[in-house]
Length: 92
Image (cartoon, rainbow, N blue to C red; front, top):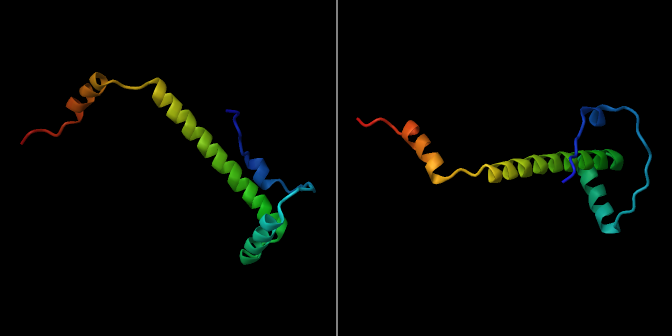
């Protein structure tokens, strides 16, 4: 998986680029309704949606890396037994 990073600069850059996006009519209407409810213009709503999606991708990427790491270093029952003795509550 390719690493995606959402840099702070992306969220604080005052310079804006004008782009053209092709989008389904129903999706555009839903986005416009949501933007109105949030008192945002369409551009601000879409910028926030893209930022949110990029953050979500970054979280999923980190979770996947953690999952892969745990799978590579899978502990056996014998490995865990030593911790059971250390973590056991003392007998009264």
